[in-house]
Image 1 (cartoon, rainbow, N blue to C red):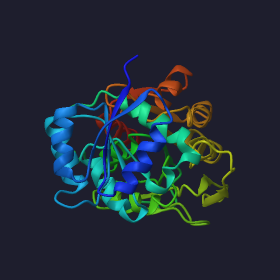
Image 2 (image 1 turned 180 degrees about the vertical axis):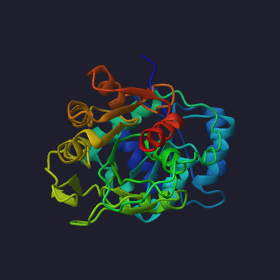
Image 3 (image 1 turned 45 degrees about the vertical axis):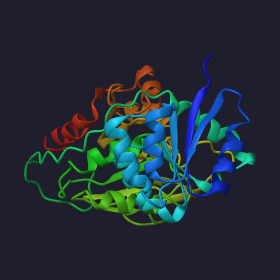
Length: 337
């Protein structure tokens, strides 16, 4: 088997050495080059043809955002952003330009090398295409209705790798007068959820926020779960943030959130499972299906990683399999009945 060819892009020689030493633990990974700025990254991506690029954001000469946009427009290759927590908003901008995922620099260390190596291997296999700028909101009309802040319906979304870009497509399409709340569990590194929520809010007509303990769910609001806790909906239709198990692989838990939506809203719940690796969300969306709610999975062709949604589809609990552009249209169709 041919080794996975990795290009490391970071203006810090120390960071380059650390990333290289962590990845070199796995004999299937080969470091084929290093670059200290975005311009070098573009040149070396073209010349070395790596299987994946690990990209820093803040660099001299040309930053990571510009480099990602250029690479994805000319020599598309999987890109994993390796960044500091202070760059959270900028990191999500990188994802909108074509990067697949992000990992915080503190998470790159010899003690947690297994997860980092697993992610690099997985993302390197993704067949990326030339990045096309996001579509404008479709502005699909929703039949006029009273906006009851205490809606009897809910939309619960499970999402992982590749999810931020998929969620942005949905959120930028939905109107500001959506007659129900949306709750989201997006797998994300600790400390990055607030940056994600802020990034989403710039492109959505809906009010979007990081969920807080005890707040009442209101129509037209999107609640993003922090990764430091698991989020669920309680019997009073309020947000409950529950302590995460130290052994949890997925954070925050999609299963816990979707299961709570099924328990509280029953057949009035809409469960959506998007792109991502692993199987988190299947048990939760299965509970929504059993309760009589609508269940939707993103299709394979528009998924960065056909993993979580694939497992859910194979479990037999998905009502509809749709492209990412079709999901918002279907939600509006259901809510306008």
